[in-house]
Image (cartoon, rainbow over all chains, first blue to last red; front, side, top):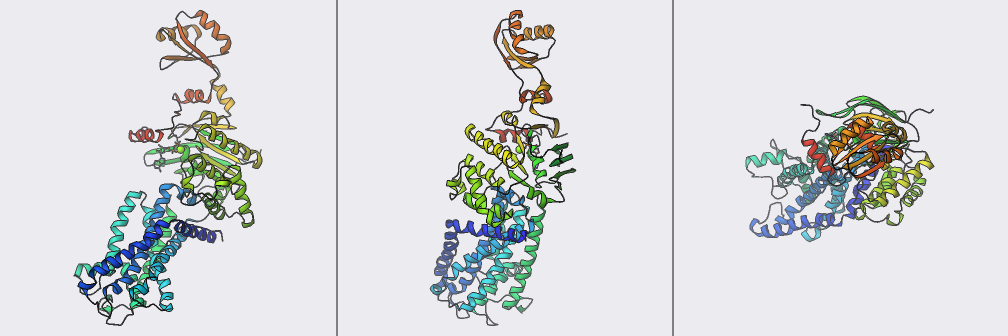
Length: 262
Length: 328
Ligand SMILES: Nc1ncnc2c1ncn2[C@@H]1O[C@H](COP(=O)(O)OP(=O)(O)O)[C@@H](O)[C@H]1O
Ligand SMILES: [Mg+2]
């Protein structure tokens, strides 16, 4: 019971912090929009239609949703390191709640904040001329949450191992940018050079992005955005399962690792 | 006599080669102010970290409120409140948020929550500032907020790790008023570390720790009686000769302290006029004082407790890099 309250309290703090951090909120909105419109408009004409009846901006849009979710949840992982730096982690670690509930509260907080950031991007759909039914939006929510929880717990896992802020930021950058750029946010999955195709396929974020894209743009079997694994075209559900399996492992590892730290 | 609230037996904490806490044992009684005194790097914070479950002992055993600090962490955590040496507030939230967070994780019952928050905030005079973000607080205000937070769940033992380090004298006095009042009202046991002697004087008992080892433990009065005598400090035209003279005439050890000499005598007030009359060397200045805890420390360790504030951490850093006490 106490641990449940602990999870809730840790989660609630993350939400409060996000709410009071208007600068972070604004950048969570502006950064993806910037990508969407500058890149999109700049490349739209030279790239032409993407197949499946969508243009480049429309193609990029679900990727950008995925990107803002990924970045949002990663950032929450960073905040564990900030808490250590600014001392608040001590208050948390010495509180009479288990480390596991702290890690869980953190993961859920990161996932919630990142999902909210994703929803902020969903609002742009009409501008991009993508029509989203209420059902698609409802299906997107748990999907974004799942993606965010996986990445958030990866961040927490790293933060509980790497004690210095500088090292953590370096590693985050080395990990986060490839994960985002090589997840199919900006280009379709087909006809990639072999090495790149390989990295995209071992990148768990790709499956989250593919699932979001499938939901938003529809997924006919011959869609150019499909991930092929050993010649098999991944369906939305299969993507979700890969994502969920990865997320599950990450959450467990994060809880374990967070629980062990001194 | 009730059971001691803290029992420490043969506690050891090593960080690699460095022995931060070196086989110490002591008890803390219910309701006392226990002063843990020692220079920087002596192992005070490490001991507190072990007692509050933040660090695991390398060897030895400790119980708090009857609970083992390794195996019954949750019960121990419920029993303690902490004011850390370094801030542990969330400065991106308001003072009130910080206290609410604390009240919730410590399971303060919902009906009592707001009332208690108001009570502790009033006690440290921060009620008016409760909705301001902590990052806008001054250093003293932050420390007071931490104190309020540490008290919020009515802990059995309140740990204060250098609670007034870097604060101005007025705020220091203020904080002490709160702590003393609290102890009177709630009977809270206070475990205090400090390297300010005047603060240590407030303790019922003092343990002196140096390089991880406990070197003495008693009431301040008894510790000072250990040094016993009054201390005379003189500056003369010829200190070397004066030292010889004092040694042979009064059979007492003379310490060199910069351009001064100091030595201990019984009954200093009567000694002083006699000494000045008898002295063959011209005295430039002379003073008499009662022993302080500083002298106790000096006598026990042969070193002074350094009282510098600014640059402490830098020196600490250098000392460590120099490998101060690493056994090579
Ligand atoms: N986490 C740690 N890792 C390595 N050494 C440490 C750690 N914490 C403390 N120490 C070392 O242990 C010694 C005792 O430190 P500490 O307990 O903080 O002293 P105090 O609080 O009395 O100033 C110091 O030499 C310090 O450098
Ligand atoms: Mg310390």
